[in-house]
Length: 243
Image (cartoon, rainbow, N blue to C red; front, side, top):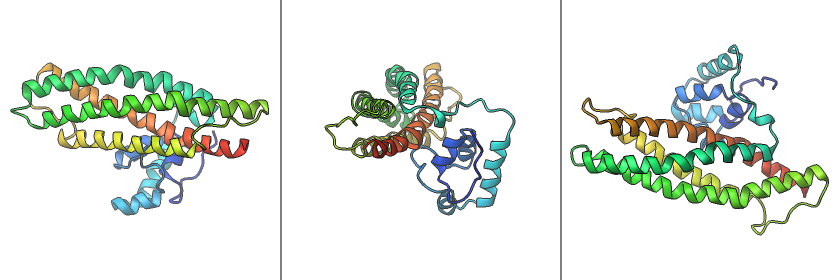
């Protein structure tokens, strides 16, 4: 993919979509590139008091770094991208969340009295499970099949499928709002755990829980980025094209 210039008018999401290596730079500067991807670089710099020239320089250095191991998701067909999201990120969430709930509940029972934040972590992890499991089903049963059907109709010159929900904008808005909720939960967990800091006498279950939560957060960032910044905007544009 051709490298595009970094400007303060470009959104955070567009920047990461064009080159995922820039995600590490935004993370370093404390900038949300998934749920907050629709903000321009200039806006986030102003909001966070970041020197835009310093950020631009770091982003350009990331783009020119040797090698590029990340896949060019922005070049993929939407049906293939939806399949990838389901098979990689949805499966990961479905497998990991029950484990996180089990460990969080155990750590809260054993260590909650002495370390009260563990009680809130357990409650938040349970809420996250309830939020995301229903969220994934809505994507897999409603939105993703419609995106695949639209793409098929466009490629084959067939009439656009008529969804019962009117247009894709409705479910997309719901999915993005639910992404915000999940992101806020993970942010709160990181906040109350002091970036997953552990006491010296933490048991193995507690150590594993913190490690898995950090891993889950990292996966969620890429998961939401692929949907909010690539799949959903392209699906909305495709819908206009096939009308």
